[in-house]
Image (spheres, one colour):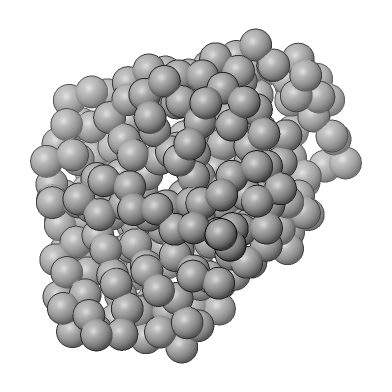
Length: 275
């Protein structure tokens, strides 16, 4: 398989420690063909001196891109390495988001929603049968804002809260309650020719599947969606490229014949079905 991992974190993310070059060496060992480094830039935190990582974003993200491009040249005969960013909560503060977009020359912008207005990251929240629907409603409404904003290349881990609902509880959310807004999100992605990420980081976790799952991928395709990116969301060398092969099989099951990575914000197609 021609494996391209478009969601990778390095020491320039607040929650990862591995240098870019070490990640790239591991990628070569894992037979990856393309790697995109996408360190965290939660735009809401830019300039916030009391935030654990916000104060350094304006230094760490340009440093991430600079180091990625250095390493890309160093190993260009063995692997293609591209510079991206995982841009969190881009619609909360447009001025801060513009700062983030101007920080560096990215190949790829991966948009994500880790938290909604007035709440912490879904990682920190407590879930009950009484609040899950409310939290998911808030989440999908913010996802809708993001796709309407449209300043990105691919939409990350479509149903991110599911990671932690399944890890912390035995609740199985009923997504049919949100069919209308989910379909609206997928239609806008398709109409704007944007990509939807298949994130493989949760296959071996309690969720037991990618984010999103097969149903969402099929619906995206039914609305004319064509572009899929694939990411392990690795924060460690051990997780790099994990289950990308399973992600590709899922993409095939949804009816897609290719996925893509982005170079200079242009999708590069990778065929996954033999002619």
